[in-house]
Length: 99
Image 1 (spheres, rainbow, N blue to C red):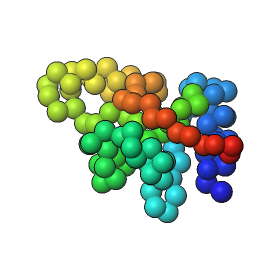
Image 2: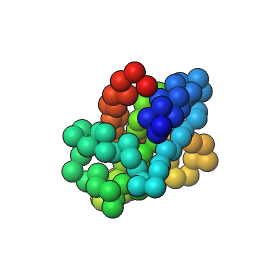
Image 3: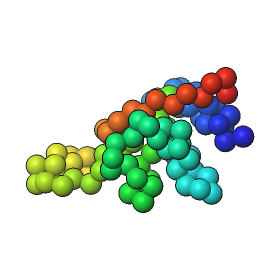
Image 4: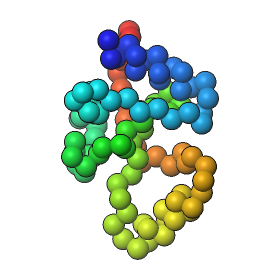
């Protein structure tokens, strides 16, 4: 079952804060279905591909593309840093029940 696997991966992601995981199925980003009510307007299936990850026991969403020169300047250090960044846009609550 997908949700059991997600629950295991979420717990595993708490063991090493540098680990970032992505979970998809044949339908794509199925985690978005569960968190649909908490998503921002820009977070549509056609615009959110490869932006939803598991890290530190949470579901996180990377920010959208920068729209202004100021936003581009803010992202430059992230682009030039060869290490994985922990910059996340939004933490989305996910109720897994007893999984």
